[in-house]
Image 1 (cartoon, helix red, strand yellow):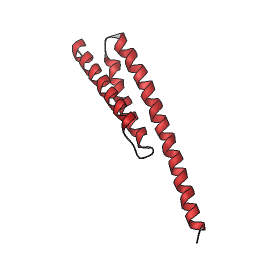
Image 2 (cartoon, one colour; image 1 turned 120 degrees about the horizontal axis):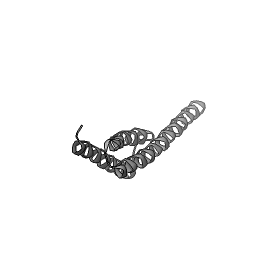
Image 3 (cartoon, one colour; image 1 turned 180 degrees about the vertical axis):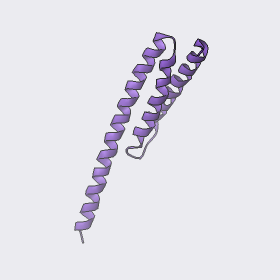
Image 4 (cartoon, rainbow, N blue to C red; image 1 turned 135 degrees about the horizontal axis):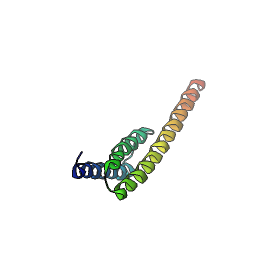
Length: 96
């Protein structure tokens, strides 16, 4: 692949991942849905690894790690929410 094409794809991936990441910080999600949002943003950030520039690759690696961290936090938030729903459901069953 040509270096200019690789660089363009890498920069578009990083830019889109940054945009999705920033939007994800301000969007209110159903608990747990932010895991998918940030996971997809991390996938787009991996396109930054195609760049011939080491700086772009370093930014992509940091971005992937950060977005995957937010995805993990979203997953945990979704698990806590599901547990809370199960507790509420069991409480409703005991009250006449």
